[in-house]
Length: 188
Image 1 (cartoon, rainbow, N blue to C red):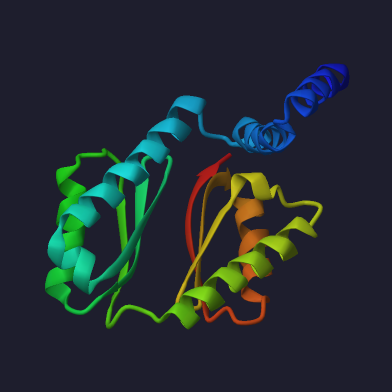
Image 2 (cartoon, helix red, strand yellow):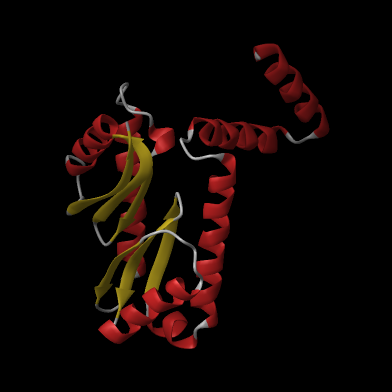
């Protein structure tokens, strides 16, 4: 395996594609360690894109709300803000009409969309949580998706309960985290 990777790296470096190869190798490692099948991972990515497109095609949602969908193992997590319960419900209905088949976890908060500063801070919190998780030898971060919205950290993945508990503990004890919400599916 090492010789194969070394040969590919050498070929890519000669053709000027070393960065793409490294990114592909890292992405491939994450895909290989994921408990979901490759087909499910592709389906989840396609569902993410379908939902984002549907939200962008709806003028009210696009202009008034800040809603993001994250799909893992066919289940949809909706996060963000909508100025009214009517728009929050509309976002859920848009996803339901796509008939993706999984559960919809509605975590959309009623309120004005967060500011650029808040979203930047959320990105920083996600980075800190992932960094701390990398430091935990017993935790396989390649199987956990971390998303932060307005200081709330959402943890998703298809993992063992012991991994989930450790991930929650790490996230809870990270500076800036207001709340941790588990959206895990458990394997035994």
